[in-house]
Length: 222
Image (cartoon, rainbow, N blue to C red):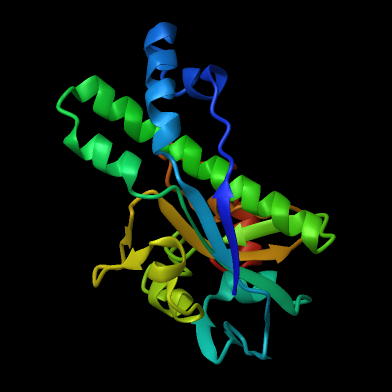
């Protein structure tokens, strides 16, 4: 298991202005000065090799993942990178304790952006260290084909996630701190986004439009 500690998270006003376009820029600047010392981004990952593949499952690290989409994406791939990333709990505690609804909302949005940047840093790290060009990821619960219940299996790949980066998985399969993400990175020639297979229209985190033809290719549509 590899650790990436003290991940730099460079937040600036331009990152925040779009999702908070109705908020005064000076207000945003002041919040960023407050938030930056509260972020403690870090990650763990593993270099794992697929041991077995079937129609809709893969086995790695002695555990079985069940997803037709994940299995299809890994058709020609043997080496993958399970990961967990977090920005820590301090900002989360500050947000939970906040009684000003606008500030609370803004802090939550800033936390989401910081987490995205932290995962981006991990992606850059993997690209550089392992000489990877294209790199995509999937996360349990991002699409129905790979349900959130697989989160527990993903966590079982690692030893002592809490000790390493302070992240725990609850019985309800929620990560604590909440500003944490997990999944599997894998090399690709064409970037894959789970959003391409999700028809849900209202989603603030959408990274790519729904692609019905692609869903048929993955046999998710009749």
